[in-house]
Structures are given as C-alpha cells and as structure tokens.
Image (cartoon, rainbow, N blue to C red):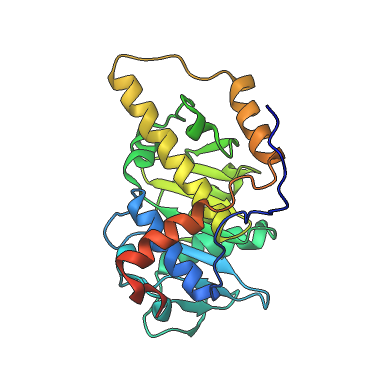
Length: 249
C-alpha cells in the first residue's frame, strides 16, 4: 500500500554545526573506536580553504584529542598554530596533498585488522554489505621501505596509490583519502570493517565473497539515495559527545 502524504516533511538527520577543529577532533575520537588505536601513532590532515592543513598533535592518543589540541601547518609542513607539536611523519600527507589536489582529508594509522592484511601483503575480499559501502579500489603499496617521514618513502607510497582512495601499506598500516571529514570517517570505517570481517571469515575456513556486481550494486544504491551515507559520522559524533562533551573545547 502506498504511503499517503499528510503534509509533513521529516528531517533527514540531526545536523551538527561544528568548527573545523571540532570536526577533526571528533574524527580522531570516532576512528579510535573503530580500531584506529595504535598508541600515539597515526595522523590526520584536513585541508582548509586558505591552503593550510589542520592536523592532530603527535603527543596525544586519538581518544583524548579535543578541538583545542588541533594544530595547523602550512603547505611546507611548518607549524603555525597549536600548543602541541605534530608528527614528523606528516611528510606523507604533504606529499600526497601536493600530488592529489582534490584530497581534502588524509588519514594514516595502523588499525588492528587493516594492518594484519597489510602485513600479509593481501587485499581483503568483500564479504558483506557494509564492507561494500564506498567500494573503491584498495591499493597495496609494497614499495614502502622506511618511515613515511622520509620524503622518498612518502613519494613511493603516493606513486603506488595511483587514483585509489584507500591503501594498505605493506608491513605498516593503512591510508585513506577523502573529500571531507564525514566521508573520511565512512571510508576508514568501511576499510577496517572489511578487513575485520574477511579475517574472521578466513578463520572459519573460508567463505564466498560478494561478486563485483553485487558489491557495485550496493555502491550504486547508496550513491542514488537522496541521503546516501549522510548522518553516519554525525551519529558517531553524538555518541562521543555524550560520553565526553569536553571534546568540543
């Protein structure tokens, strides 16, 4: 039976009015809960309209970052704001932003399940709907041969990445590229979900991955939806804020 309109227009989802620093702090917190939690490791850059980059500080774990902790660097990597210093490994981001001008947000860390597949030099199959969301090519960067603080190592990673939006860095970790912070959350979350589910399926003795056609259908349905995946990041942000309102300070 068709749903009858009664003149009421429901809202899409509770939108949030966040400053860029608050948004980045919440991205750190939400991704920590997804498994991006390797002690002090990992860095995120968020490109601003003036060309500068917001970046999380080196000295804080992702689950304790607040908006007031976010630093700012220029295109050359010089820190121009922030009370805490940033990681020297942010060189990877600087090189990527130079080569991928459309990259708004870059995430690098060593999440539990993604790093397992990176250690195995294998790209995990897609086994379920969530793992197929934002389905894109995942690059496997075997060229990594040192700390990404070295510009030569960072350049090798960028070359291997090609046009992909996500990469497994062999024997190291993962990298995710997105247009903005909400998209970065979804892509990073989906990558870790896909890696975790694939590991468990293989631990069971193997399974049947989704066909490319089925996986691509999921993406098409999401892309054609009026709301797509909007609201996912906001929902996870509200969870973080309920637990610790100080994240916004």
